[in-house]
Image 1: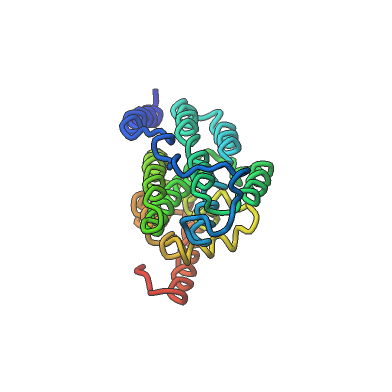
Image 2: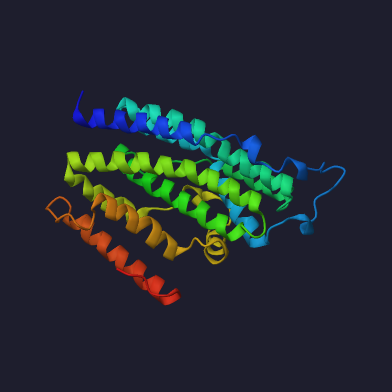
Length: 291
C-alpha cells in the first residue's frame, strides 16, 4: 500500500467516525405542526415566515442539493480508477447528502414559504437538466469539491444567521446541514493536501481550478439573479467567498507560499491576476478586504 493510499484510508475512516457523532434525522428537525393540506388550504403569498429574498435563498439551496443523483454519478465516474477510499467516500457522502434536499423541500412546504407549484416546476427543470463536471481529472475534481463543500458550509451558516429572527427552526436546520458540509470539506481538503505533498507540481492544477470555480447550481433558471439576492440578503456574496472560502483553502494548501517552479509558474501568475481582479471588484462594491 502506498503512503498516499494509506493516508486516504485514514482520512476516510476518520470521516466515518466523525460523521457518526453528528448523525441527524430530518424528521426530528422539521416543524410538522405547521403542515396543512394544500387542497383545503391553498397557498397564498402572505403565509410564509421569511421575506421573498430569504425564501429565494433557501429555494436555491434546495435546487442545488436536489441534483444529488447527478453529482453522485459524476464523482463515481471520475473517481472510478482512483484509490478505494475515494470511491467509498462518494457512497458515504451520498448517504449523508441524501437528507439535504428533502429537508429543505419539506421545510418550504410546511412553512409555506414560496409558491409550491412554481418551485415544483423549477425543481423538475433542474433535475432534468442535471449536472456534469467540467474537468475529468480526479485531482482537479478534489480541488473543486473542496471549494464547493466549504462554500456551501459558509453559505448555510451565513444564511442561518440571516433567518434566525424570522424562523429559528430553519436556522437550526441550516446549521445541521453545515455540520455535514464541514466534514465533507475537511475530507476533500485533507485529501487534496496529501496529493500536493506527494507532488507539489499539482499546485498548478489548484491554481487552474480556482479561477474557473462556480457553484454546481449554475445551470438552474435565473441563477445570476439568485446569486445577487443571496449576496445582498443572505450574507454570502463575493466578499464572503473571498475571505471565508478562497483565503481559507489557499492558506491551508500553502498555494501562495510555495515558490513558483517551471511547472506551476504560468498557472500561479494567472491565479494572482484573478485574485487581484477579485479584490478590485470587492473594493469597489464594499469595504476593502485585506490581501
